[in-house]
Length: 436
Image 1 (tube, rainbow, N blue to C red):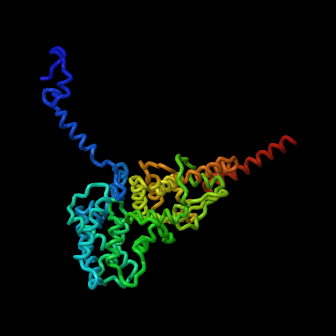
Image 2 (cartoon, rainbow, N blue to C red):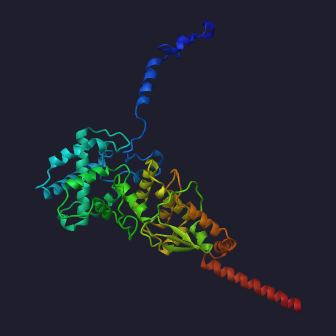
């Protein structure tokens, strides 16, 4: 029983001793607890530089679970045991077998496994979360998934490599699954593994790089006029990082973002104020410009996978310390511009957005895209400031007020002019009455 002050108080030596009786039921071993916390503090609490594959933060995942979960193909260790992934494991093994059958004279499965075992530790260090598989199982995952991706990209580029009974290119649904599953932040294997396997299974006379093959597979994911492939001085970390670099480097903008954020009016209000929309010629969706009252935005294709890729790119930017907020900034800007289906209609009619969803879904897509994401630096702050400066001028503001109040529909225009004509006739009649 704990001693009270009435019993002479609790001595300091009792508190600092081996154990301290908190109440009748619980006793805390001070020395043991101190040792335990000290041991945890001595561990490396800094995230290693090589970490590049992250779990999606729960605060982002809660908005759309399906946007971060594979439908059919597990790549890497984290979704390996999901029941929906079991049926496609045979497809991956079939692709591995096909790859080896063409390279039987120069490379064997044993050599692939042996060489990949040599980079297993480096590959494992790329994951931010725990990997609950042993060395052998992890190497099997890397070889099977890596060779599957390489064979997939090669077959996509060269029709002659496809068999008559190909289980992917003969089934449109499989390609739809892959366009979703391969761009997920949690469904990745390190690029260093892919590059290693690609070199080991290199085909004589072929000069196309792995990055070129991969980007060819995803070439229409954002637009029917995709960016050209820009070489990077620093290799990608994985497929999702490759796609992000593709967008950022092809935008041609190297300047840093700025601290702060400034909202702008919706596109309906901007057009009503006399601002013009123009389809940008740049092949990067990020290359948005404003000059002399003209807002120039590159075309964007909105389809089912658009939300998936942008959400996962935002998740990657939120998790990776070395990533800038380029995609997050893009989502913030479009959310400011698009608030209603009328705003969406402005973009579709101008040719900027090619919408394959219904207008309501597309509008909600932009309004919910970056919820709970933190914007460190805004890459369109200067553009927003210029847009607001233009909009706040007196003439555009009055024009916008008239357009939104009286000229929103053909009937409102007719009603306005009818009322104006009636007012003029009334004034003229009044003047004639006074003169008489």
